[in-house]
View 1: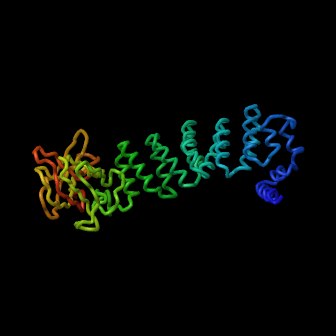
View 2 (view 1 turned 30 degrees about the vertical axis):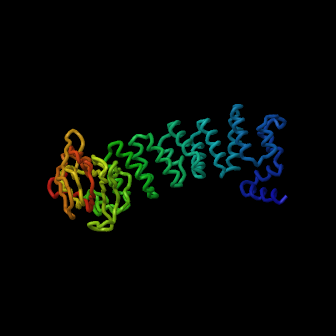
View 3 (view 1 turned 180 degrees about the vertical axis):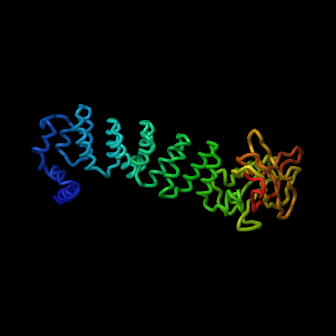
Amino acid sequence: MRVRLVLGILLAALSLPLALMYYGLLKLPAWEAWLVPPESTSPPLRKVAGDPGNAYYWCELAEWFDEQGDAQRAQRAAQMASALGPNLAPLQMRLANFYFNRSDFTTALRHTSRTLELTRVYDAVIFSYYRRFGLPLQQVLQHGLPQLPEARYAYFQHLLGWAAPATVLQVWPWLCADHQPPLELATLYIRYLARQSLWEQAAQTWRQMAPQPPEQYLVTEHVYNGGFEHPFQPVPFDWQTSPPAGAVISQSTDRPRSGRQCLKIEFLGQENVVFRHVSQSCWLRQGEYQFEIWVRTDGLTTDQGVYFSVEHPGPASYQNRSESLLRTTGWQKVELRFRMPRPGLATIRVCRDPSRKIDSKIRGTVWIDDASLKPLARGLS
């Protein structure tokens, strides 16, 4: 009896008519006004008559009325289901399907938005519906997504998998308007832009989202994380490392030139290593630039040492490279000057070519620190 009383109070708070229905006080005439005929043997009608507080029974009844071609009663039953189960994600998703099948996209989006607010379980299904039914982007952004940032981030990540750049470029500023997206999502976006060769937009986004950008980044400094002080992020504009067989790459506190860390490359004497496995890409305007980096070595063997290059792929490709470093040296600065013939991407790379000698398995250690890439005062455009 106490349970029935509590349920009755809750239902009364939701809707007095629903509470009365729960206690069976609206069987006549309100029931029969639209549940006609009352003696029907249809299972959906019998279920609702037996348990009028069950939102799923009302949803089932709405679907049954729709199958019978009774649009008005279907609509009223669906509204009753929604009122009884506003916090039931499976029910809200089922109601969305109901309205999608009727091409009532405005109401369907209200239910998908509520579903997205309640759970992440249906993200893929809902977002595929938005694409399948060709819903306008602005309609989806305004009505098909809740205020919840996680739901909006999930939709944006879905777009990165298939949408054209024009669409994605519209959504990113909208996404950033109220909350700064997490770094992981920004990284996916930058990698998407890179795949589309939209390098300038990618670089500007990295400038906006990077955890610790250098002062005047992309203005007077184009190397990010030049002191190797911060964890590397999986974007082209930070250092990318992938150690080959016969070498180990790490951020090291072993006597950096400045700061707390430097980059350390250990060659183990096991392989004739062809090394191209440390790099960073920089988007540059047309003009002249100077690249600087500090390096020290310990016991580098063979006739082929480590050098630095700046590469620009494309029809007018070029490669500027430094001299090779061998044996043991203290900290010394390596400099490269080069000209960008047009705005584009330049890649800084740490390299070692294979040796043709019998004794070709390189051993020794290289430390790198304080990388910088600055425009020269003249010739920039």
